[in-house]
Length: 206
Image (cartoon, one colour):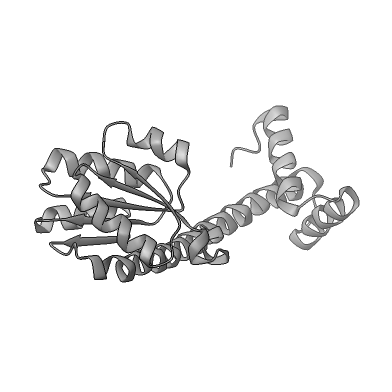
């Protein structure tokens, strides 16, 4: 979330999820003492996605005193569906659950580590990890998108070369000039050419 990088700590909204009110109070007090003023606490895991949509937190802190696999898997599904830093405290776990937490995108998964003085550093770690993972994910998505654009442009060039008996530089130049004249991106021109070819005879399905 790029917004996180731009906000001051006291502007961040934090959702604390903990069925144990005493443990939730430890987390809330640690956050408020660290300068986080916008803290919302919920004590029910059921309907968590809806609560996240309602409160729109920047960061989520989840604490499970006695986790079981079903409860953890349910929370991992939440982690997969929301693009936010998540710090999760559990009292015990195993290797499989730790691996599942990482795969689900949990930014910080802390086993037997709920102590008041640790909440702030762990939250900071979760935010930093989330931003790093988001940057890597965006770079990967940009690379995949660029590769797809290049493939589409190559298909469109092939169609022009076949239909108009022109060489590759001429086909590329024709598309480039069309993009400039119509104030559109090259890939948009390429998509139009491929779509038109498909409608006129399936030559865009190369």
